[in-house]
Length: 170
Image 1 (tube, helix red, strand yellow):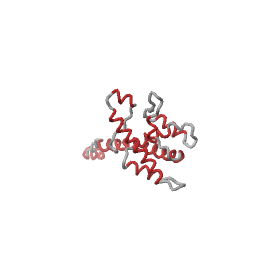
Image 2 (cartoon, rainbow, N blue to C red):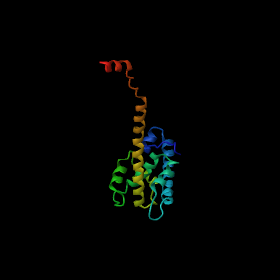
Image 3 (tube, rainbow, N blue to C red):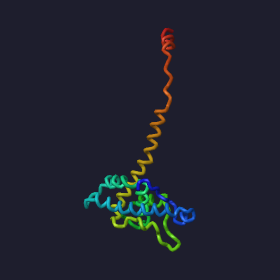
Image 4 (cartoon, rainbow, N blue to C red):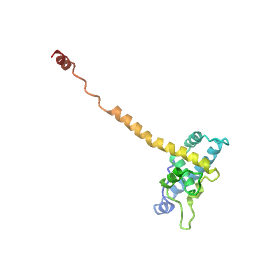
């Protein structure tokens, strides 16, 4: 499941480009991820506290962070009216690079993987954790590349000991 790529095009694009199977496979994974998010939040909520780190850790063992973020963003997107969702999370979900799923009859195909059985306040806390993890993942390659650059940097030339001793004599 973790290796199934997220299909980030509309169904009409998939149909026009003979990619319906990739669209359907990704959609099935999104629905499975929605169910897993619901279960992970329930398991890690004790009635007054939620362990979002543990929930996210469990989910990342099965799904990519990208898919978890898609499900989270699509869940928050239609809740613009809901004050239990922070404005930052609402803005993030609207700017998340995943297409709206409305077809020509007005049906939202993305609604099949909206987490609807979890309280919006808990989804807000979970979205905070997902956004933080995405930020960490974005920053990680930069740290790695800078370390690699440092390791690949040529060593400074060694100082000539005879030249130093001649300078000291003068």
